[in-house]
Length: 406
Image (cartoon, rainbow, N blue to C red; front, side, top):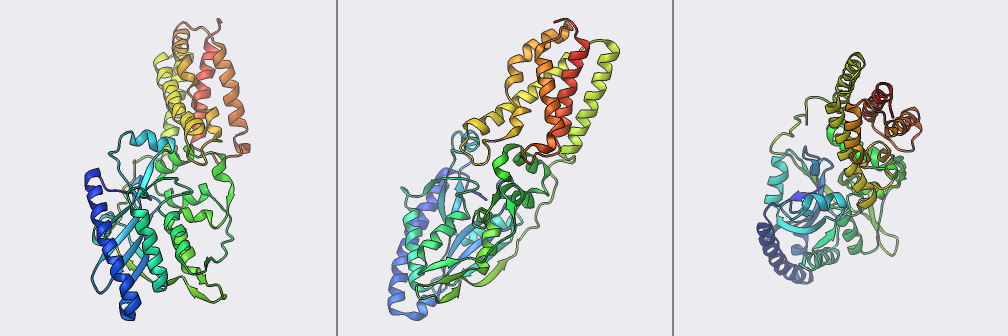
């Protein structure tokens, strides 16, 4: 649901060029609409929906607004999903929910080439707007396009490349946009699963990051953070004016098929569950060897608890520091947290001397309760987590059995 222009200088050049060209075109359009009916018919404004692609930022599709003047040949795309991956601290900002996106403008040919070459179809919903509504929409977009208004704080679920075009369209119509009822019950997580099921590692990452809030029922409007759902709702929507007269919001639908086929190459040959089960089997073999040799394999503990603690740092940031929605009430913080990092030197030193530690008893009890009541946790936790919890429980159990001296 995003679009990376690459070099900031190139992006800025495109922005400025598009801004002044569109500004001049709008003046011409206003005059045309006052004096020439045929000219007004030459203006087409469409909502573009790009089908999902294999990249993480494209898994859920993308949306933008297209402006065409069929007489002059001008063809631009207003895109609320632009960002610069070369910006300082991009990854930390994104993790903390502090990433600013911006409205960009590029020729349609450039926009089409980027997505079509990545295997995405572009579906254009030509909007059934009056000339006055078209002028109002373009003026709002141009105002948004000014450097001082261009940036906004991106929010994946509430304020993104799909909700921004919807909100600005609702401001420009003479009356209101009335949507048909969508009564199918969904949550943010189930909707995201519709798009990332083909990419199990990305799906696991999203499931680990989202907390219990993502499993609460959402209404039809909340579903529109996904471009395909907003497109579907627009197809059935009508514009109702003050007198109650209605007209369809979408006049026609056109599809630009992708130039290149969608890359269906798996992210990794093994699924997350397969990898978790392999590590579980390895952990079982390590434990058997420990019981046979009466000796803790300390370097394996180092790997396991280090991985647990580092994963815990990421979850700690998402739960307590991030502004991302739906990450603050994540029950996985019980399993993955930074606490093992503080105890790691003690775990290794006491394990090598076969000296027990209260830490293993306490955390073993917590893990046992987590596994027993797994199905009752008010959060949709991926099953891949269960083998990981068993691995951790197995390590604590080995210490409890083999290490007798406190």
